[in-house]
Structures are given as C-alpha cells and as structure tokens.
Length: 458
Image (cartoon, rainbow, N blue to C red; front, top):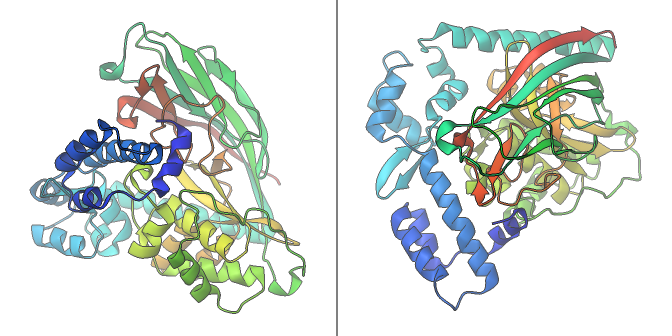
C-alpha cells in the first residue's frame, strides 16, 4: 500500500464484511477478506479498500490489548479504591474506550491515562501525586504566558531540541537497507530563525525549509545500534490578536475551503451540523467563533485509536462527540470549510520546560486579520476546568510553546515513503521502513529532548 491509496477509504465495504467488522469478528473478517483478495472478480478500487481494511484491523487489534479484568486491575493500581463497576460505568459513558475483538471486550492501551486526564473525579484519586503536580504546573505556566501576550501584544521563545529514532533490536534486519524520516521545523508562519545544527549519521536528504511536512531522511544499511539523530533550533514568535467582527472585510478569500478526501469531506451530516451551528450568519469571523464554541464545549477530549484505523476522523467526533487534539482540529477545519471559512492544519510538538509531546491545532483565515490560530483541545480543556478566559484566548491565538513540523494534513514526505506510514496524516515523531515494508511505531524508539528554552524580548 502507498500513500495515495488513502483515497480508497471512501469506497464502502461490502455489507457482510462491514457486519463482521462492527461485531469485532476480526479473525473471521480477515479470513473473508483474504479469500476475496485471492479471487478474480474484484475491481481495483475494491481490492485497494480491502487491503486497507486488512491493515487497519490488524493495527486496531493491537491497540486494544486489555481484557476487562486486566483493565480494572491496571486502574486499581493507579486510582485509589477503583472498582470493576466503575470501569463498566465509564465504558457506558464511552469514556473508557473499548471494542469487541472476537467476541471479547478489549480496552485501549492508553484508556487509563485518558480517564485520569478527562475525569476530574478520578484525577483527584490518583495515587501518583507527581502526575497531578505536573498538570497544575503546566496550567500555571500557560496562564502566565497568556497574561504576558495580552499585556505586551505577543511573545517569542527560542528552543533547541534533539530528536532521535532507533530501530528496536527485535525489528532490526541485518544487511537490509532502511529509510528513516525525522520531523524538523517548517520555516514560516510563526516559526523563525530555523537552523539544523547537527545530523547523525549523514542524511540522504533534507526537505526544503518550507516543505509542508518537513523531514530529514536517512537511507542506507546501518548497524543495529545506530541512533538517527537531528538537533535543531528555532524561534517561535506569536502575536496576540483580539479580532473584532466589525472590522471584517467585505471581500473574503476562497482558498482552503475545498474538500480533502478521505477525511475533510462535506458529508450530509457535516453540512447539516455546520448549517445548524452557523445558522444565517454571514460574517466569517462570527461563523468561525460559533464553530469554535461548539467544538470546545460539546465534545469531550479522548485519546484516539491509531488514526490509520479510523475511516472518518471528523465524523468520529461529530457523531461520538469525543476525540483528541487532531480530531478537534479536523472537525473545526471541516466545519469551517463547509461554512465557507478558510481553515487549515498545523501540527508538531508541544514544547515546554516540563514536557515535549505530540500535538495538533489549526488555523483559520479572515481578512483583514489573515491567518489566526485555534487550539480546540486546549480550548476544550479550559472549558472542562471552568476557565473561560483561557478558552477565549485559544480562539485567534496560540501560546509559543510549539514546534511546527506539518502545515498540511495528509501530505507526503520528501522523499516519499515507499509504503504506507504508521500515521499517513501527521508528522510528529518519525517513521521508518525497510525495502519490503514499513515499521509499526512499536518497532522503533522515538525521543525528543529539550536542550534549551529561552524567552526572548519580542
């Protein structure tokens, strides 16, 4: 499978295979798919769709490893007095994510972290006090930065980061050529003074500074102990805006209002939802704000299965009313575009003195202000914590604790991977493949280390 095969996710599965998938009969479904693929009657689009489904369900199966008993025991080890009945309660709320795998209930690998992050009543019972202190420290840091940006009109922070990828011993293939791609900052927008300081070993290619999903590419035969490493620095300069609907220009652009299959698609429910949210409003800034208010106050934050396993990412949140940072962004972008407001993707890393982690957010365009920012998941978190001032900040603005590695959703690498990436949509930690197939993210070590962080006088 290749990157361009993602378009075949729009092909409907045959009814019998859909029923098997929905019932979690993965073993039976795989047997049926393999039988169909060995036949001669399949059209090429259906063959591609079934090949995608086979890969998706294999990854989905691995993402849900815990039985109900194992999940309850795991939660009891981290949350004071947690009971199996509570797990069943959160399953009924669709807060403890689960699927059927061959007639057994299985919980997602990170279900516990998700419960603690999104349920204050469980957060208060966490046995690990350091986890709670880190969350509170992070919120305090953001509050100080937001206050500074409001007062001074913006902020600038300089970062130096080291990113690395290493193939795990059990996945290493002696004498085989491997391609490894490590994300690096995209020059432009808020990312300034980007410099790649060190690369080890010698790279095969470094993508152009403004490439939409920028990477350093390594290619060759390497010893097992090889650590692929890139050290870079950049300055993130953010201005503070408080957009006024009265200042919005009469003439507005139409770029970034098109569909981007298979996910940013104006399906009937998306059109209906956009119409309900926006109503008769014609001012694009107010449209975007109405969509932001819906996205940040109605759905609930929740970790996701691997994106490759989800057939319709914006639809997942639109119908199940939950999702992670990327799905918040995609629903905002899709609804904005359906309503005629230009919107686009940004993603990379959330980079603070306390943590570095993967994160996604979005931008929308209204003249005369130009491109402005939205962080739907941070806005949702602020709403969950009763902090409406913080939620208001993340409509139009963004804190500077970011590294932008992708400015377009679902964009190919340069050079492209020969096989489907583990995450074919985003670009945050790194990807690797051998000549005969790609590597799952569980087969590689990835790391991002903060070497220096410095607030600048903007």
